Length: 205
Image (cartoon, rainbow, N blue to C red; front, side, top):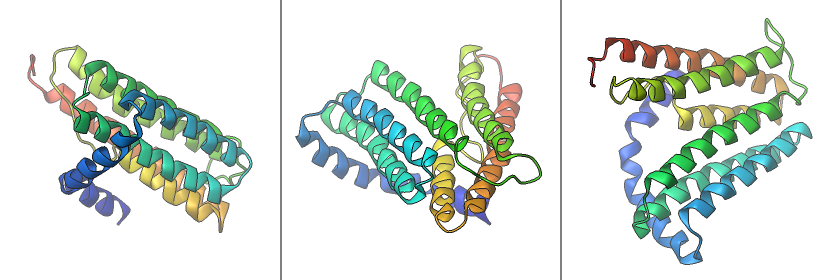
């Protein structure tokens, strides 16, 4: 059920292009460069980390929501102002990894109940799967296997599941554990999907 919803959202991403343009137009008036917005996302991830450590799940969820929105703003501003660059895209990708890592690190300090194994084990498997999903794409491109995209759970969907888990943790911390379990399983499935695509890709992509 959850995976069906995630796939549906992924397939309809193009419908948000008009919204992205309006966001770019509005936030470009503030005078911040796309890279400034990107760095702001990193600062907000530290705020999420702090609230997770404090187990202030409502504030953590809100901060993660704001961070996700700002992550949309940087790209929207770059496209609207014509400041799209390879360096900016590279910085955005690097910061995305740091943001997810900082938030995952924060989960280790929250008092989450285990599920079959301790919660920190699921956090590790989730983050490892997230890294492998990204690395499978980067490695395929480096080895001349072309652009490997897709997979059941990309970064936007991972953040969505994590956000929902943090919101539900307001009522019961075990729900956040279940969300991390789901992320651990699906992120590694996504990595295997990309690895499979890379192995089947013709040389030279």
